[in-house]
Length: 386
Ligand SMILES: Cc1cc2nc3c(=O)[nH]c(=O)nc-3n(C[C@H](O)[C@H](O)[C@H](O)COP(=O)(O)OP(=O)(O)OC[C@H]3O[C@@H](n4cnc5c(N)ncnc54)[C@H](O)[C@@H]3O)c2cc1C
Image (cartoon, rainbow, N blue to C red; front, side, top):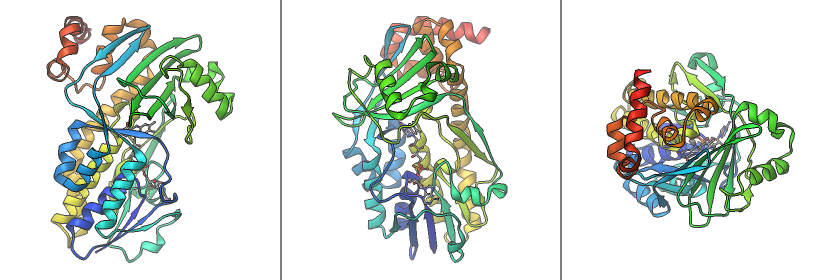
């Protein structure tokens, strides 16, 4: 079996290592536009709910990822100057994106995959003799755009702006802080992936973007503005720029997951949204489902790709629904934040995707609920009857 994978992000690398380990006589070639060891972004977090699936899919890479991770739990949510601690049962594993990619690459290489860095594909013509061509090439996928109409791809641009920075401070616990400013709402997320390194995401709504003048600043001015705006949250630390452009996000959907022997996984298939923080996990879970489907149908790619969609779609649908509700919440956060006091605001935030019931809050956040459960229960009841 001859497989070409476009993109050496988490989805492409994980698929390569799983196929290499499971399928006999497979030839796997991975094409990546960036040089080896170059990456955008700083840390990603993998929720504890995904660890079991990773261990089951491949214990060796799971163990290496866990060894290289920094574990954190709890979160501070700040609103109207008050900070509320939300303690959760179960950790998040924070890992540097580059470290995650290195581990996955090492394991994929040991499983026989061949790597071609510095190769930006503009067409898929060279893959005419492949049994499978995988678009693991992220949100601007060339595999998807080469077959735009057949995939039935549609996109919509969101209105909020965000920039993803690094910071040379440790954040304990991780935080999500909302601030009403003279320009409108700004908010930030900070989480650590080592004892000395953190990821810091700054965001604002469309009104604040225009009024603050950020739109007309150069990158250095934007950094100075953001450091000043969030000086306290940053512990007066400096932001580290790594392609940190304030941007809107575009959400892409497709009607078809595959076209002939071309299939999409990860961000190429469904755009993630950082506010549900599961892009890497969703991408790697796609790889597991595709590797499972191919292992079960190694001689019939049509059956394998049908099975991939059939088995993966129900879970993916729920995550996409949760993502869309989270997006809606964040696109309207100014009005919600103006209306609510800190504790109800935190409950509104925690239940925004419609997936977290009062029972689940009690199960997953018992200490937080012991302090604030009464206010939460009456707020949620009031919302349900409104
Ligand atoms: C601000 C922000 C914060 C985030 N935080 C988190 C987090 O905390 N936790 C989490 O789980 N996820 C997070 N994510 C999401 C996560 O980064 C992605 O969902 C994940 O990397 C998807 O993996 P992927 O392999 O599908 O795509 P990618 O990681 O995008 O990899 C695609 C690869 O394909 C390559 N490529 C693209 N086009 C071509 C081409 N034409 N030719 C050759 N190569 C090509 C790219 O260079 C890239 O290496 C965040 C994202 C953002 C924007």
